[in-house]
Length: 527
Image (cartoon, rainbow, N blue to C red; front, side, top):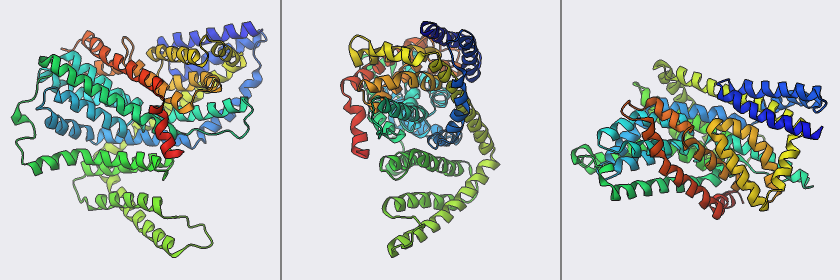
């Protein structure tokens, strides 16, 4: 019956891919196909229905997982920043700052893509926003449509790898469970852990490296083909403004998202907050920023709240604010009182921001979008749990372990096979399905073979980002096609992203050859 179970596993996986390509909803496809094959396997005696009794516990564990609470918070932060026109200000001012240089608009798109990735973490929103705002401008200024489309798609997918990324949050949770499972199989009953914070730190340098490679390519193209990247006329840059005015414009556009990024990522890397807590900081910060952008009334409560938020973070870093202690030193008591005052100021500013955004209709839209995305993620997670239970019940876990363990080349051969399979699956499946379905099946075996979990997680994230860009099924290409003007053909988009796919592969190989790119920062920050 082992051969029958393995055959049913392979057929089940193929059937899921086929049904998804037919357009059926992901979550119901995963759960429905798994249930059908579970019944077939039970009928032939190859599946024990006792596996399905673990389903309620899986659902409860998912809903009570503190790490996954970061998902709706980061989604809320990203959607709120998108609706508050932060991207508009960034593209406008950075475009005018760099635009007078040859290739300057392309460089500004790359920088804005990195900033939006670090502040929103949502690929579709970034690609669509930059496609609507910057693509018409680049075409109007004489940019090669292929270069413009390729740069926008590539910069938009940086949200896959630059933290705080929804991909890294989900991947970190799955990788943590896989790492503990691998250690238990090796007889290590006091397993080490890998956290979402480790993946955030590990992905930072590879993400910035990709940004640098994109910018080097833009400069290279501007040198060898100047007609593809013409500069803006001098009177359309910021040079006509007084230096102080130009500085204020750039600072006004850059400071809000940069401060928010530092508050979120800095609190995680400094050990002040866990990713879920940092996500709460990001959600509150995005709400305050949206209040400043949309409010027409008094702004001093929002400024007060912003200062209070920073003050609470600083106090948390240097003062023990726990009140459930028998003896509290005088210095700590003063810090607790100051923190309480900061909390009041933050509460007042948050109420004002909520009023402004609700009055302008932004809050309702953001809440609905957040609820939809969060419901989709968790429903897919539940469907993936059903799929993995049936897959394991049919003997698929042992089959995967045997295939990877017996690959020529040992750990490197197994890693290469997994990376290749994930790359091709990225053409058809969203990153959520790959993270929840594929990674739990292959990661434990790879980790048993001695592969570092943080390095593996970063490689998977970069690989998924590459598949987002690759024709003909890359999701980023579809996002841009949906908002590109009729003058831009699908062939322009496909041809434009090819150089960036090559850059992605080069970046992936650099992380493979130099694992320290992914493992150095986690060791620095977390030991």
